[in-house]
Amino acid sequence: MSCDTTVRIKICGITCLEDAMMCSELGVHALGFVFAPSRRRIDPRKARSIIRHLPSTVVSVGVFQDMPARSVLEISDYTGIDRIQLHGSETRAYCRALNKKIIKRLPVLPDDSTQSLYRRMDGWNSESLLLDPGSGEGRLFEWKRIGVLCRPFILAGGLTPENVRETVRLMRPAAVDVSSGVEAEPGKKSRDRIVLFIREVCG
Image (cartoon, rainbow, N blue to C red; front, top):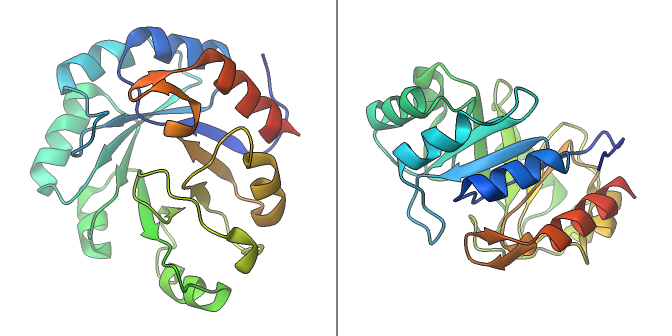
């Protein structure tokens, strides 16, 4: 399966080789491996063994939250992940010190507006920003209150095959990030839901 859309697709919470290879074969652009507290947390040794089998076209992303920078770098180097995704209160200085390709989660608050998001996005010009109202909890936001943001970003939070087409149309993100929305159960992906999700993103 292939997708010609310019919107890239990341599937997070990969816990086994079978799911990783399935996602790769279906044309997913990036896979997320969670090293932060989560039901989908993966041991670095297992993540390393999976990442070694990924084709070069698939970007591997390690998800961390408020972990000492030294530990983040050790896991990053050991597993061979391509990018580091930070979901905590990490500062700009912390991100710069890692000297790695960074995706930084920016919390979307219940009362956020286009203007308030722009203010908080300002200054993160060297990293990719992930807008997420729930930090991996699958929490959906009323995105029509925000509308199109005139800068690249990754969109996450409660995305499913049932709502992603409309959300992409409203927000025009550079990429979408999904985990629970394409699962059969926590940590186990559903091929049918991934296929449908890709189709809906491709529109």
